[in-house]
Image (cartoon, helix red, strand yellow):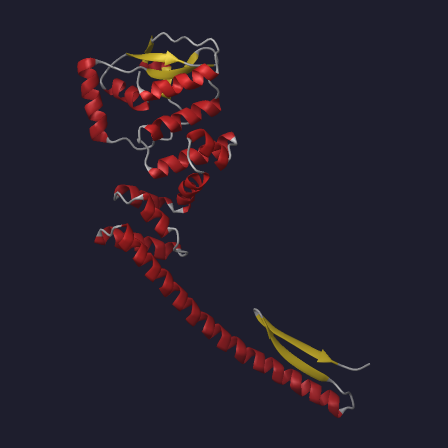
Length: 279
């Protein structure tokens, strides 16, 4: 049997409840979609090819479902097959039932798609995020269950920090995960989007993109230094006004017989002014 079904059977063996390994013929309208389905984008051409295949040969591989609330079937594996079957006009589809909880259903849905390389890197990241936020799994637990490194999970999830607009541009223009990680280095959102558009317009590969990102970051640093220099000059002018006022006040105290002194010291982020007046 195909890999996805074998994967589902693996969980089934670890949960030997009253599963029916017989292939059932279920109404396509009787199967609820998997709310944990990480796959958001379906290639239209590939889906159409599957539809044509189903019209000619039928559904060759059963979908996998679970029975919830004792009367309703929910899809675990086979989202694309179910969609294609509906488009092909089938009223029923072969299905195998397994008994698993929500956590494992979500994990299977993600793993099946990863094994088949059906998910793009953003869908994969969203799947990991769902496992963490909705089911309380840690990055380490996800990595262990999926046979991946914790750092690879973390790197995927970091990509979700990009704006929805940039994520859409990445997918629409077939930019890679390495492109996405390079864009994350740019701290300014507006500048980041400008760089993304420049990469798309010039069809830059990953290496050229990384070079452009570094150049952009350096320009941001240089402009920040110039701005800070202007602030320092302005603040320096302000501090001289203050110290002159204090100096005059101290001179007045000295003229009245009070041996007052003051000092001004530059500190990180500002100045410290100390006035000593004897008792």
